[in-house]
Image (tube, rainbow over all chains, first blue to last red; front, side, top):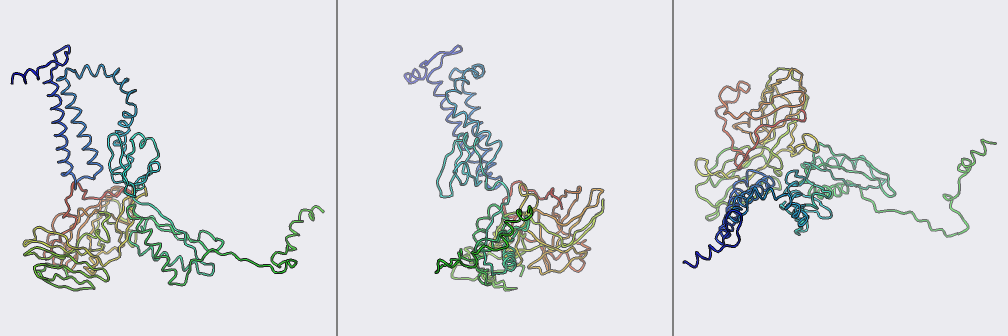
Length: 299
Length: 247
């Protein structure tokens, strides 16, 4: 017992105020451990309580601030135990900060970016995003990194600094989005009838929004087909399902009504007599007169 | 079709067939509407089924709590005026299972007989998705099919001094209370604050016997319907809707 007390009283180093023993150091570690445990239990409890009441991205941000806030306060409060004065630390902070800054540029950069990501919130947990070449769902925004679950189900960890400084495409940033098809029909088909049928299909689809209104119009007279553009607005979380559903319905409905999607066409003329030039390829006299128009006027 | 049913039972109306059959110790809930079929197994004793109208925001999929009713004709309301009008709104049919005394309510099924369509209220960048419905404006309470449409008694109040041109109204379903008997009824208000903004909400107080606008119906016989939205564990959900993008 006496040996144990002696062990805890063993002086590690002496500060200007008092000596720091192993006991002090263990107490410091114990306080930090308890505070980590307490913060985790508290955030776990709050996460369950807030689950159905607050959206996940808001609750996660609040819980992270709470978790790290408790740890920072406890850490600063416990510093005197190991002979460090927090106020002195603040004075020395300038010099230490510069040294630490150089030593841990990337970590601090990511930390600061993470803070701004939480404040500015260009992305939220659950959003579908594209950051650089990575597309997927945001599963977590941590203090150092952002986690993305790609559409293929892979986990990609992106440092916050990279997220903050690069272009972010938030696919669900707005409540609605537009998608477009080009439907090709034969020249012999009635384009007005095709447009009517397509509009009717869109009208029957609940998630094809009334406002902004869909548009269906002849957009191009192609080489082999009349091209009809179909533009539809849909809720961001539903657009992909509608896009696949309507396209097939359009194809089926048009075919049922005798309107067909043509294959690419080329008219090939096989010339049997090399000396005989087809009438279509003979230069027309009118063209010649037009070409000589300037000469004739000048004359 | 609306009402309380002891199990087992069968009911059929307007193409909807709902039944709960007893198979051994199990109860099997079956519902058919056209090609759409639902079948669920119920394990529990002394339960009963409640079929009543619910908020029209659950089918085909719940993606918004907001309902936008577009008027057939634009309505002009003078500055400072207060008027009552009647509109129709789509009704969905909710099937609940409950203990005796309507305790421990659980939603079993929701179905709809009306056309489903969604729209955006506001701008693409900051608007809100709404379930869409088009209604005529009635000066007296209409009599629609209660399995398809309900009646909203809407009190319009123009608190500004300018004329207000109204062509639509948006409600949040969180405050919606439906009452049913031979019809489906709710009361709402729309306060026009200025040329471009208004606030809407449902009247939360219980209906008393003073409903003069629909004298044919005995208001006291109307039952309060159980709503899907009221079963949800809500945090801070706004009961009113602020129409900041025009009306």
